[in-house]
Image (cartoon, rainbow, N blue to C red; front, side):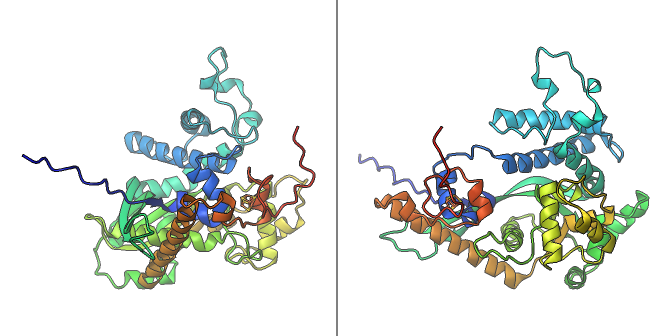
Amino acid sequence: MKLPSRSKSYMIPEYSLTGDLLSFLTCNLQYRYQNKGTLPPSKPVQRWFGEFIHGVLEEAYIQWKQENTQFPWDWKEDIRPIEELIDLRLQVRGLYPHDEDLFFSILNQPDSNLTIDDLNEHDHKKLASARAEKAINIWGKYLFPLIDSSELLIKGVRQMPNYDENISRSNYYGINGVVDVLTSMKINKNLEQSTLDNYNNMIIEFLKKDPDFQERISNYSEGDDYEIIIDYKGMKRPPVKMIDSKAEDKWENHKQQILTYSWLRSKQEDAKPIVAGIIFYLNELVPSKEDLVLIKDEINNDLTDVGQKYQDDIDLINNWEEEDKAPELSNEFKIDRSIRIINVDEEEQVNALLKFDSVVANIEDSLIKEMKGCKIQDAWKADSDERTCSACDFRTFCKNNSVKTKDFKIP
Ligand code: SF4
């Protein structure tokens, strides 16, 4: 009897929206070293805060569902234990905060008899804590009751762009992402809910004020279910226009991300029509000095879409200097800047997918060049803005580094 031989393993390359698309667009060469070469950044502070705030909000939602703790949550009682838990989880993965971001974890000091009550307010509530507190008490309060599922993995398959059976690694590629939060809504149901809970849901109020969203909703019958994809970002609101052509266009890329997520979600069996996405830019709730410098610049150069109507806040920002204490901006200004509604337009969705295809085509192209023996720096394009290059671990040997490293000395 002839035993059949095992067929050749068939693997398709997988690409993720945040890990690959956004990272490749920041700088191709940096992406190669960090993602394909698994060389993590030496100071992954931006990554730490992003992961921290996602973890805190996820855990806060789980606790709210179990205990239904009323808002506002007390920082010391309700939020700090969650922060410690998430901080320790990140430390296990080698991610540590800067001293000015988070107070050290008391749970991690086995010989210490310190308790949270031994710390004074100034010492313990640092930047990341202040943002976590605002994120929970401002947005969590309205978001948690709307959540249908969180941390939802979505996957899909697309044809490999520019497929050539002699060159390409596969005829398909996989695309995946994790939706932070998926909400399922019925307009009427939520209006009833808001009366029951005795408060108006601020997220729904923002959606009601959005004319594009209202137009989209009007195409559905009353009582129909629809979904909204929610994404948290541990960063400030990006400018709508870029002055530096080398800088990553985060405004556009975030939109592409929501549109691609909406396509992936629409392929799942239990999906309902996805009408919009909401991005929460959580740094806006407590901007750092670095954020304020950028906000000031963007307002004065007409590079931002939200803020111009708040004259008092603009005056405060314009009169503020970097060495001063941060200005007391109004809650309305901060809340307005922290929410962005992206309507899911079918035509734009197709364009977003084509853009993803073209990014995959470029990554595959560079990978194949490298597999054929081309040097890494020749196979991957090195091109980024000064800000990204100055924080890049590879700037000392990168030929296209936009920051001068003449003064660099090996210690
Ligand atoms: S130094 Fe700049 S151009 Fe070079 S790899 Fe890093 S980010 Fe890219």
